[in-house]
Image 1 (cartoon, rainbow over the protein chains, first blue to last red):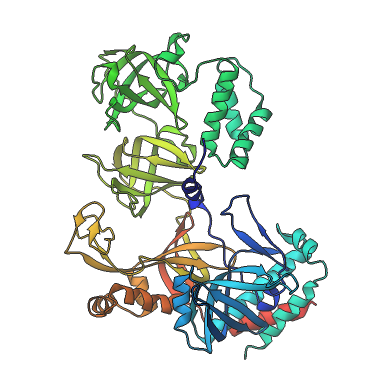
Image 2 (tube, rainbow over the protein chains, first blue to last red; image 1 turned 90 degrees about the horizontal axis):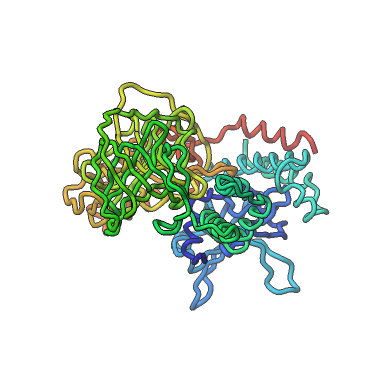
Length: 200
Length: 415
């Protein structure tokens, strides 16, 4: 009757891969609420975007401005990826050997595309929460890819804000409850300013 | 998860015996087993059925032989044979398969004009061997239920008599959407071939008609032939089962007849997806394929083909497997050689040169292609079935200032 861990893993094999959400750093930075979907130990963890969508994976393109190797036993890299609205804090640890090798060989500054898992953490109970992205893969790209990402992300952000205004979507109510003081107009302005930074 | 279907099935099972089951209670029990204890739904169904049988003080439906002595043997048609019944049938052996265990003398499928069902004859039963294509009267066999699929068990108390019926018995194939767990016949087109995931597997892939798609599998057995992508088949007496809520059909037992012509299939149309490539899967880049006529499987690095073993005279090929993501949905991509060459600018000859002369070998080709593709925006066109896109053409997306202006208007328009 009982199930062992391996069978549970098998059960997961027909899952649908979570899409990588397009979100500007200025929005991701505001995430405070994260939750699990399902009671399983292996259930994915999501952060709740203030614009009213869940995200357990993000795709972002920006400039890797610095990277730092840290730790002795548990080697890991931290980096900062800058988009037109702010900074994504990214990291790759020994559990992501491929991501670590990828970031190790990139020379800053460079345009990079990052696929990774966002999470909210606090250094200590007194400090304010931070959002970081655990890298699944990172690759050097060109400026055009960065510009395409800004268009893509602006469009997806506006789509989410519109859905939020109409009250459509499964996570809209939760976002309003979790982020009562955030005004969606801020994110519309953010999208506009990001677009305006691209040369015509 | 919704348990009403399972509860309904259980309730039906008992109503056959004139017993009434509280469906709400059954659902609660199922939910508790699955949600709280992480038990697979199929296991939970069996467990709840057992408990109810105990409560009603009736013998478990899946005992073989001795258990159901109280049940009278009835002359039945296959469509009416339900788990727990003792039956006498007149049926034709339409398929024989290799028994999976030495305790089984014979296994296969029998059919009459109402349907078809799996059977096994226990070695202990000393039943006479039946011949494929002949009709038999099978007296006092037990119907049981193995993994949700009904089957006939021939035991030592079963009497078998060959009949001189020569009814050819042509099954009527149904459409994919109408297939149910058990034995099924279908007319469908083979639309995709996937890599076998087991040494004993001959082939797996996808069948389609205009009502849907279903995964199929063919296990290695003498005389079994692989299906050809794009061909239409009448498939008689496959075994349909369910895993994770999805049906699949095992054709190892089936009679396969290739048909002339073509049939319409779902989502056979072109799909175009624009997005970013967010993952390049292992097995991308330059690969080696099995040179045996009609095989073409990808070999392992040691040149091992799951069917034809070591093949030193392999054929090189290019392909990319990965995920394309538009921010809302992720689609599995498969890019064949010509698309890979056009997109990466690396030809098969160049890739082979690198694979044979670079110290990193084939990995170098993978890394160069990954560096070129990962994180880039592309527009892929191809056939999408079951969330996989078989790509015919793939192009880089370029910056469109019209799109830029429109988005600026949209973002600045209302605030």
